[in-house]
Image (tube, helix red, strand yellow):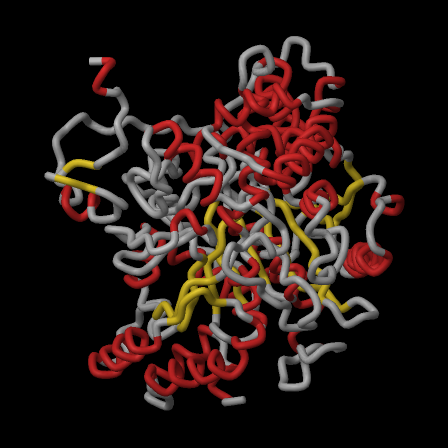
Length: 491
Length: 99
């Protein structure tokens, strides 16, 4: 494996600045790595070697210009629009769709100097927790190819974990950045609702969706987040503020921060290795004299139920636009209504249909008050419960996922078990709070375990400091360095 | 929790999604189980609580209603499976004998 693949974003910038590496060399090294590893990991739906090398050559010709992501190879989830480049959201209904515009985040990545190597695989329309719902192919976890990478941003997580790119973008509606980050041993961040523009993101649930970065470590993740954050006139829900500086305070770590831990953590129904990692983290923080207190979180049962009502109601409405008229697939028929029904019946996969129908059910006449309206009231309750916690604490610490990566095929026939992969992540989406997953350790089977921090609304800088503090405790990348030995079966 | 065949048919119509064969039967069963799961929410006391649609402290701002350049029509229509004369083409909505 080329040593060029080992450098972080900051290190790479320094190499470019001092002319010790050419962008073309670095991009070629990553493309070689993709050629070698992605035939089995299958993180990508599409790779663009020529375009990437041409951009790299242009970078070299112009010389290092100090842009924060100059010459950094990245990947973008396939529900993020790229002008003139096929964008499918992992669905057959959008096969061949060439968006006429770039998403704001794509524009911003390019403006910051990043080079996009390809589009990554995902659960169809971001609905799933294993990437097995992709209409195209499954993606394998680089740590153990018999296991899922998590989802729905499984391709973006596996691409970073497999060293196929330095960082990537995913989208997080109920944990779709953080859960795959946890299962793949990388860092994954979802910002405050409204922090990152969704212009050009194929919508799933508009009151919950946020685009977020995945990277090898907290500092790289912060660099990516700084590049994509900030107000965008094209998305009226973005917070009217410039992107916050997330790297300046990192070194202070957890110093002076107050951390809340779920009161009943010891009795949580999670994998033993996840529980041990959580409790070990609490002990480490106490040893470091971090101020820790116990709090009651909204119960997972309540947040999962309200999440699946809100998310699917909104999805049933958002996905109404896939009607065989404006883009993608059309199944011919003699009448318009039959054409709609045939196109959508054949173009959507089973999980998407299940969610559209559930969303339709909870919004339909006679049920609206009992389900959607009630879920919005519960959302209000969850928000005020978090408000109370953040009056006394800066961060909440909890696991990201109840289990490490599960086997391919293990949960795919049981949607409810699959939904429970998100028990610890949906709350941050419901309340619009920023949250991050940091790799903490390995299970006895050699699979990564991630720990999650949730921060107060608008407080990404504090969240990143806390994450950096955790990273220094876990030293995950030092303890489990990347290498050729890893990922070929048992770790 | 039961989801009858007629109820499912109604949902398929509302959602404009046609299901068929064994996938339809499987979905009916799974949907019934998922509805039972989300029904648990009804047990929560929300008396006096206002439903909340939006999180965050700021109110989304309204832009000025001014004409601005947008993407060229032809580029947008190019993504359509069928277009004629600069319009989307669709199967008949009204039959000739209904006119």
